[in-house]
Length: 150
Length: 150
Image (cartoon, rainbow over all chains, first blue to last red; front, side, top):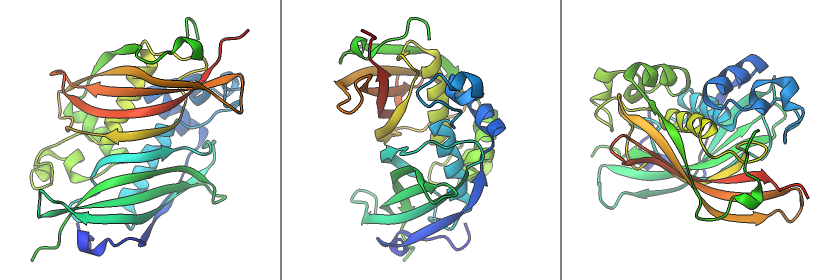
């Protein structure tokens, strides 16, 4: 983990960015066939009569792609990107075939662990945006991060 | 969607079950290579020096497998399993190679939509258990469900 950030480095207000990833219809359908086989994720024609009215990505596909972007991006906590939990997970807008996603992460809170002196807890809001800058997913992750060795 | 449950059917306290899915080391590493390539998810030897001390599944893999179990299971809301968001997402215990997962879903709240008379909002707690009955993942999903046609 070269040039990773220790707990002490991850102060509220800091932001981090990622690269981009495009999702085409084939990728959307392939993920959905394996993990979320519902008609609005697997078939353009069948999707027309559903709540969404068109083929859209599974929210868990958007999440998985976002995780990959985060792991490959600027946010590199010491010890890895480890989350004990997630709050306020929302998908305000669907992801459609051809959309290109990127993630912006902002540190919103940090505090030392009371029970484990070698780690700290960092809350970060991770927002996934499409190519028009619209937010398609947002959540707050509770990260476990190593403290700087003394 | 044969024999699906309308909003009116999904009253608080009802529970639903799924089948089971085993995760072996190869599946854990394959998912992680694509979506969460960190040493504790991709390599047994490298995992030993990490926070987890052993190979464990990506939390997003546990989630994706849980979604598939839910879609194939007893919980079949009219219109599909559609979530506008998730709260209180936690992984209290890691998923290890060889673990067999199942999901138990409990309706915790339901209310008609104020703005859209054709749908209702149903909150369900989905708990993923391993073969020892230990909870490895839990979250509350905010589902959008069709109301029974009049």
